[in-house]
Amino acid sequence: MKTVRKAVLPVAGLGTRVLPGGKTTPKNLLNVFDRPILAYVVAEARAAGIEHVVMVMGRGQGAIEDYFDRHVELESHLEARGKTDLLETLHAELPRPGEMSFVRQMAPLGLGHAVWCAREVIGDEPFAVILPDMLMDANPPALAQAIAAYEAVGGNVVVVEPAPPGEAHKYGIVALGEPAPGFAGRLNRMTGMVEKPPPGTEPSNLFISGRYILQPDIFAILSAQEAGAGGEIQLTDAMAKLMTVQSFHALQYDGSTYDCGDKLGLLRATVAFALKDPELGGQARAAVAALLKG
Ligand code: UTP
Image 1: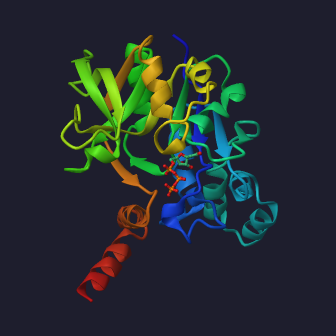
Image 2 (image 1 turned 180 degrees about the vertical axis):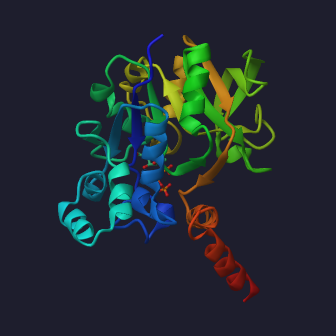
Image 3 (image 1 turned 60 degrees about the horizontal axis):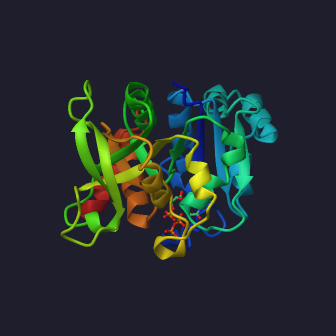
């Protein structure tokens, strides 16, 4: 079985739900508490053993490349003032030279198209996909849990979680088969998946929530560039095709997810991460309580 060494992070979406916030700052560089969303997910990928991250970018997103590069002027400034803690924090977030690639999607034609744009950098090996909007707070990290599942069962693995009550019809929902041994009923073979099933027809309440381990055969399917729901090239359509010839498993990971793709999700994530910050958590709690009192 080949190891999962590379991860694709599609960040080229237009982010209309967070406008005007994401107009000039790419959506995934918006802050959750004290750092951009992308800083959390790149840290998750590295903690899961990923050696190379491929960002799939859109126009005007050069600030993402700058965020993951040295900032020599700022570093000398901090160094001259003895701010070594801050310097270390900045350095800890950086990939080593050559560990991150950037490809352009050129037009936001859908998530499937974005993943396909990474094909040359991924090559012929299994790879991870992380949807950066879905911030997952977990120990071990969500992607590490997905990789552990992949190492047990092979094939393709997607992370799933329960949709909010009555909202399953808004998501890509999975149908489950038998459980895999050793995962306490949290890892099941998938027998199907359906994008936005009409209410009442959902095969389960579990939706595909933003971490995938995929075999490179997905690229040949995506290269047909067939548009699906909303006129977009959908990753779920390509996965459904791949499922006819390869195994898929669904993992219910252990952790908390914050959907930062809309304004309230960003707020929820910011408050949650502020409250658990070792240094400022107490003051954050007092500030939130004071606001709620009015
Ligand atoms: P979303 O469905 O959240 O779309 O994409 P979006 O465009 O970012 O946001 P809204 O709906 O307009 O507010 C899920 C992930 O897939 C990426 C997005 O950047 C996001 O991380 N994506 C989506 C692409 O990279 N390219 C696309 O063509 C579509």
